[in-house]
Length: 388
Image (cartoon, rainbow, N blue to C red; front, side, top):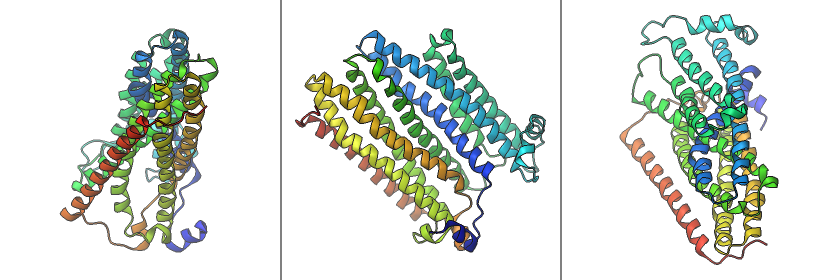
């Protein structure tokens, strides 16, 4: 499909290049900070504390984690600044993006009075958001110093709520929500963003940590089996949240299945859906093929096989997921407008039947995730020949 021709025919407006780059960069920054801190708190930290591996293995992973988090703070700080300048450029004053980068102009934007009917100035919300962003970044950047790395747990767990606040505070509406739909839009939007950034950011963190395999001992496979097991649960929760929130958002913006290939917005959304399903498929390979073999190798106390599965086979699939996740973040900035608006479809109308259908789909999704876990456990108990 020729996207340029489709855009011209249905009135789709391609976002300017600075908008595409700043939005993608902002989500990369969030993925690095939110995804890494949540994954550290829920996966890496408890696995390292429970590990009986040699101290050198634990120290190597702690050093790599601290370095990753420090760079995540740098990326978040830079991405946050460019995103704030983009907000100023899009504020309706027709300001070029280059002019919006000036600190004085940004400061004036943040101090602008509240609009008529608003309960708080929009600039004040962005000021609070970026205050949280700066604090989160500064906390993570501190991990560049050897002294601060001794307090990795404290700094990472301090940065976690600040990184989450960076996204959550920005979603606070300056005016009272018009109706329940508006509240649900905000709620599902944040669920989608946070679960997506935790999923992608966690994958990148663990794939990066797996790069330490050359400095780990022969028994490191036991530690990494625990890391992958813990993250499998986190990723399943994220998948459920991404798909459930995505259902709501897709229904709001797409009026029919046909609009996925007859409108530019719909076609771009279709590409995003395919990429996300590709990530889910890769996760399924881990869940149904690799995790059972890791469990079997662990029971058999096969050190060489366990090390090969956890630090060579598993990271390859994870890097494939990371590549698909990066493609998703590339597509997201292009999702401007709505397929309904392009096709001239009426706006969506919520009703009890819509909520009933939505609840049924969410329950079906939850059941499928539960079946996934049970099936993976059942496969793990089978006698599967370990990979040599």
